[in-house]
Length: 372
Image (cartoon, rainbow, N blue to C red; front, side):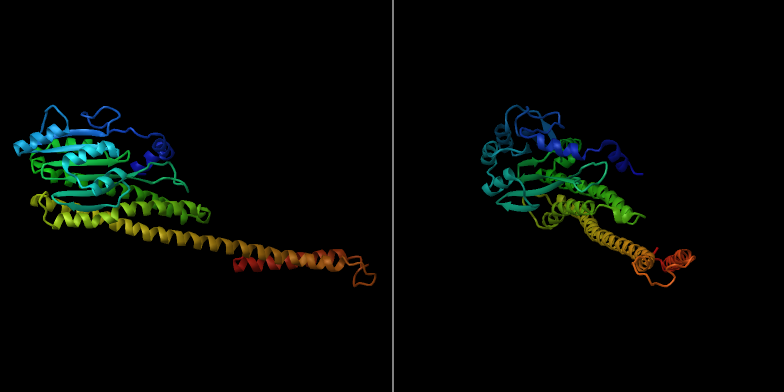
């Protein structure tokens, strides 16, 4: 048994995760990075990078942007988590972000897309997370989704994250460990975000594969007709949510990989092509899952129909057997004085014998035909 299956049996976090998401509201911050902001602020981190190295300079985002633009070197990476309109208004003015993009970043619930506003790129990524559960039920949550919005300019990157998963703290630390890569500019951060999101897609797809295998095995088991069809429908709904997150990202990645842009370095475009290839793999697997879950559902319905037909045949066969003594007893139960063998000494034994023989012959005939 795989490690993921063992983990689900041990933890059983499906309901717990759902309750925590309902209970935990604003304020939220990313606690995975050591340079986090105080609790209650939407700003997770604001860092200046020059030649791929992190600069420890005092001041806020406005001071950092001013230093970068005065020197003409480096860029500022500002990370936020579920900002309000009031919190984001000053940032939008500082970086001259388009109002439509700002509205999308604050409100969230957007489809994956890539938009260009002058010299600024605005990308939306849907993040996904596999919700561990001990057993798949008709109400199990399998896939949880969030969003990451990325504003990319010549000297800045602004990331806006929605949801409890998809933390960018480890990603930031990984980039800081590779200064040569980070020195290529803000587009490196955009690629890293896209790469992490697509890698999460592949991990979730692998976990969903295990649920698919489990349901398929149970449906084709000996008592597969007793499987709750609600479990299959629930898995199909969760698969549809995963599909809505993954499939629309194909066109934005293709555009990043092929269309020249002032803020995307030509060397980075090749890396976007690699991310697009990984996304294509995830998309093909999800399409295969969609066809497979339909086949599983049809197979389950067919097994239910066959089981019902078998039950009806058994009921019909037993009804035919019971009809013989019912008919004979019904005839001799009539109160007539003149009936054949009514006062015969051996009449009772003969009737019982005839009934038993007829029932035995019918039983053998139904057994040979497979009805019993």
